[in-house]
Length: 149
Image 1 (tube, rainbow, N blue to C red):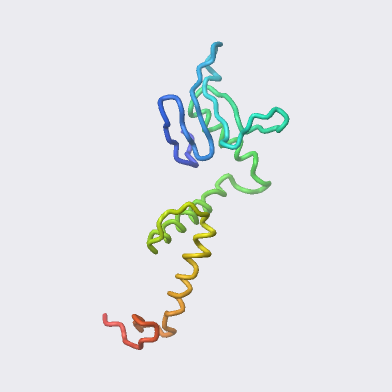
Image 2: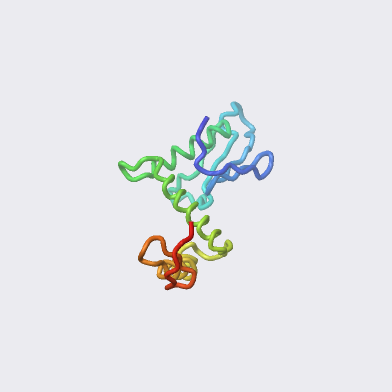
């Protein structure tokens, strides 16, 4: 079985969303059934002169996932592992976990804007209040009260 790089979300019995990809079961009026599943990228516009190869037809949902992975892997710069997405996914997860811890709700702004306008200033202010000596408690930015264990 192909390892999923994105969540596979069923839209209905014959349509799926897989990250930036769409998959659809479309039985063709010809035999065999080796081309009944179509896949394409969200940004695929179908213009014949664009040379866009982000689409295809295969025989099963599993074959679609494999074809998508193969297409993505072919787009990698030389020497870059297909697993290059994992660190980025980890960073994105960490960003959203940190935002949730800071009480910053999901917003219709880019993560960069949220980072620059809300997260970074708050983190800088919080870190500026940290005492230079370990074992000190800092409830008011400058207190020398010792931590009680």
